[in-house]
Image (cartoon, rainbow, N blue to C red; front, side, top):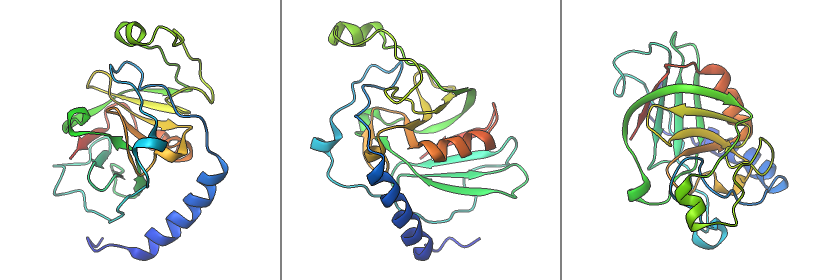
Length: 199
């Protein structure tokens, strides 16, 4: 696999994504579950989506592929996945944290997987925003989209989003977001224990 950019893939991927995204805009999410930060209105703070798609090899980042491996590049706003037997390689555009203060880098792993996650704001969130609901069930208003994979770092997840404008942007408060169709695919490929590296 080459480390050279694959511009053909980039163009084809984004043409399909853009068309789909335009037809499925949803209301902005309220917050990342469990985090202490609020979701900003991205339509005001960020004006464009940018992801840099470049195929990578796993060896510079992982010593092995036991249980599979995920590399999240917060600069290029892309998530790479390699299966344990190297038969599957996936590359997805992501949302990443809005600022360096919200960005966590390093090694972690998937510790829990949930289809149809629910969301509960923390006590500090409710103190700042008493009008917020105490619970949001699975569905189109849920900030976690259709699937969530919880990391060993408290409050950090790789999850879907119903607000498709977020993908390819610095728009999250710590979590890594994917289109719902992509998180569903990745969810099925990963297992509890899958290695995760954020750079």
